[in-house]
Length: 286
Image (cartoon, rainbow, N blue to C red; front, side, top):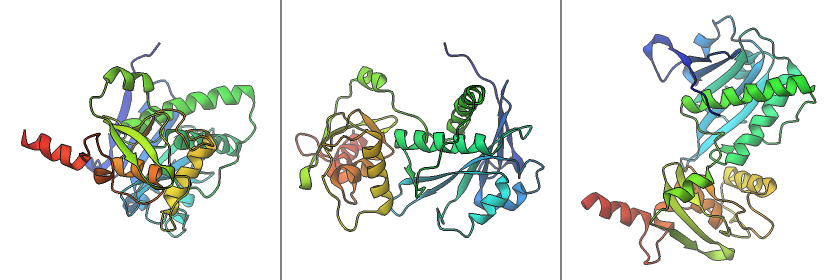
């Protein structure tokens, strides 16, 4: 049974694009959202160097959403290192998750880092830029239960802050909507897919096939996303989607399906060969 939740949110300096502190009733965690430019201001807080996990956000040249999942025993010190390292050099925003009493230890945050990495890959809304999968710490049954609750509350607050990075798609609700327009891609190297525009983004339907190989110019971030979807079983060894899969944009969906950089506005077409761009233009004129 779902219950109502009470969230406390403090917007520092009245700037919603700067620093925001979030807390959830009856939860001992705390979430900060901060922009890269306000990292120094964050350092003045007494909890800035608590042990916790963090998420860096950016966009690539094709406007795809990127995330890097990390952990640290001293959060601010680690974020300072990310200013000059290469894991996600152009990150613009960050979300920090800590315990208000600094009760998380190294094993806890390694466990959280691994779980959030898996959740982000499963949701496939953002491209995860970690070069390798984080190692999951072995924790007691008691700690595991506590950390799973910690994950659930974190997902709620991260979503509230506008980052739906850990949300998996509700297939049942998609079927209930009964979309009217289905778009298709049939292209080189075996790509043969169907998809719909949905409130959550662009949904590629179960059974759609992706290209069996990728082009030399294919973005390394998209290669990583494609590989992670195959590894997780979202795409099977026959290169078919095993479930409906939502993407943040038609272009990201088209790129994964076609194995090359693509403009989804023109690649996805209806049975009568109308593109998404054409249909949107027609609806504007109505």
